[in-house]
Amino acid sequence: MKKIFFILGFSFLVQFGHAQTKKINAVQTAVNNLIAAMISGDRTALTEIASSHLSYGHSGGHVEGINEFVEKIASGKSDFVTIDITDQTIDIVGKTAIVRHSFNATTNDGGKPGTVKLKVLLVFQKEKGGWKMLARQAIKA
Image (tube, rainbow, N blue to C red):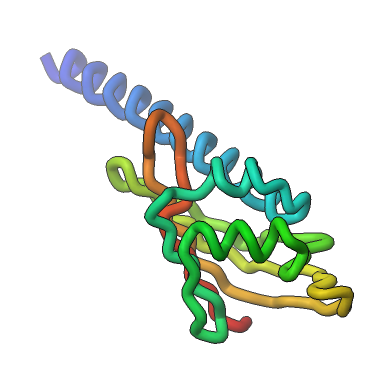
């Protein structure tokens, strides 16, 4: 009898772990898509990765909605040349994913080269079968 409970319990843990890994991989793909869209400045890709309820907070305190977020990057006003993400963690609770990482980038905002070093918190929410960025907050590293 103990063996049956052990086997059932172990099977549940393996299935749960596999499902969690699939969700984490899907969120990682969404983060990768976000980074690629930020570098390319592709308006469609930026719009597709962001929730219509987006709250995008900058390290200086300015907060943008989806329209301002997309326009700044697509117009080149905020121009990311490279983005390097390190120390990333992803935690999933239901249909919400909490992503934290270090964000190091080279920029060319308005033709002026620069660098950015931030700590970032991203919140993704499962919407219409995909993970959408619902919120972002950055602080200077």
